[in-house]
Image 1: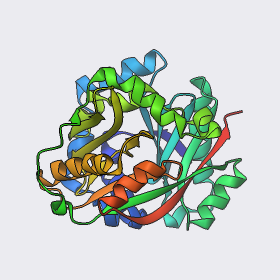
Image 2 (image 1 turned 60 degrees about the vertical axis):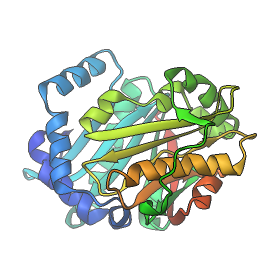
Image 3 (image 1 turned 180 degrees about the horizontal axis):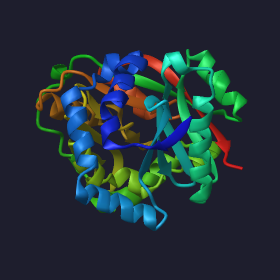
Image 4 (image 1 turned 30 degrees about the vertical axis):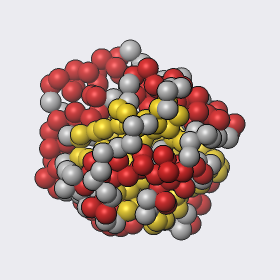
Length: 312
């Protein structure tokens, strides 16, 4: 067994895992093979590798992909990103023919040790609520429940009215990030805030990440003259058929019609770019954001659990 980092040649095997081992997510997101190949090319360009290498050198890596290999064959993979004090795993997968042979545990352990080396205090991951075997595996490895998230879907993006946004909506400015993060923290449970804190950078987004993902983004806020009170980001990428909305931030005093206008503006923007289906992952504690999405026609496709454990 070898655990190593992703190489460009691994792309076709990783794509196979995406298309075959995540049926619920794939039914919604619809990975485009040609778009995935373009993202991989961008990630391995000299300029992207220079930025990623420098950030890693100074102890601030953005993401690390691990590959499990047996007899020169890719048999598993996971991605490890970083949010505040936590390493966040996604796409933990092992070829069905190689399961129950320790590959998943090895990927988890390599991710845990890397997080510890970078000074992180926790590791976290998401697992489908109905995937009891995977959850049992993670719990045996020391993970415990942190939160529940719902994957919401809108099947007809063209249904959003293509109307000018109301005057209370405007484009996002970098100075909006700090007050919006404060609003979001008010509904974030203490344990979640300790493990996955909300910070300004999450709201500002990353131009570098958008460039690598071949993504176009747009962000709006509700501002009635007192500063930003609500926020949403829309993302369309060549890598997926579906567009993505970040979970809306909606302050306590924002009227439902303004929150709905925020969602509708984002949905219409995606539809104008040829997107027919939208997805949004919303934590259960974000009740006002979920209400705005459901008011705009989103429905729940499935739920997932976020699990975490200390690195020590």
